[in-house]
Image 1: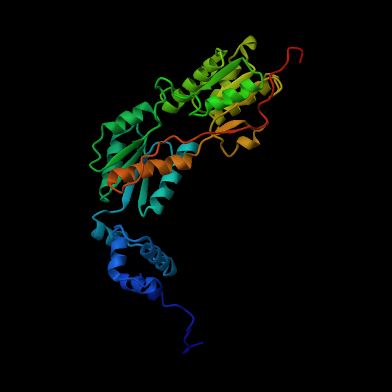
Image 2: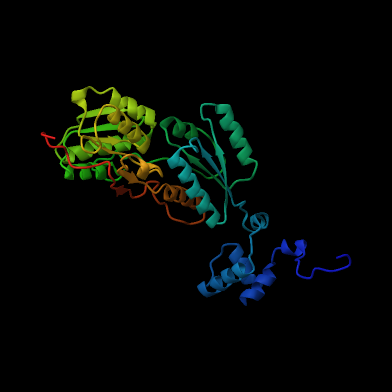
Length: 347
């Protein structure tokens, strides 16, 4: 009604007001100097830090990055460059890096690049660097992309996040996870294996191929076949459709789940049953893998953890004093219905 006052409605200007360090100090029952030290990231007693953090949570405090930059000399902004944001694994890596940055008090600005266009790369870098970044995280899946990033003078601390090459003598065939698939299939009695490898411009494809060959050698076996795809279901299908009838193995280890899906489609088209005639495995454990027909046995990689580890490594370069974790994480074998015992000769 006209002339009435709604006493329950908060003043918008007050709702947006940020708590001062003095208000935080009173809520935490500590000195404002202690709050200032906390905001600057300096060392302090655990009990004091706990009280300040509890007060910040109670006051719903959101840090002002501009003010923090004046205190610390850092912008708390990091640029991220990627070229495969539409792909399953790389998109989760970016999500993991974004979450880790936020938890560390940083903002991650992500730019997806067409690295075939160097002018676009230069324009993107110029756009990023105008924000006074503390660092740049460059995700590189292929040799060409990694080489392109290595030629760039970023002007700030930078980390090129690429899968480490697993080519050292004695490297474990288990690390990329493919060795676990081979071990699982050998336990089921399989001896005739075919690998559908990804494009060898990718270090991940080379690592998976190397692990496949090393694992077979460990069990005294030779590959029954090797073919290549481009990570797509179409390429996996074409690879299997091109095989002669007498070249079809009892076990197929595809370099990723999409190529495994294509291989399964081709086997069905050729009148073969999975896993009765041929067992099929993939890598990545995409969300669709449990819903393939049959559900796909695969390797699960923690892509979000990879993104987090890459971000933490960059923070160490910036001077945040965190660990240097590996970009690779421990793979997990996920057994489903697409693998079974090797068919007996009479079946």
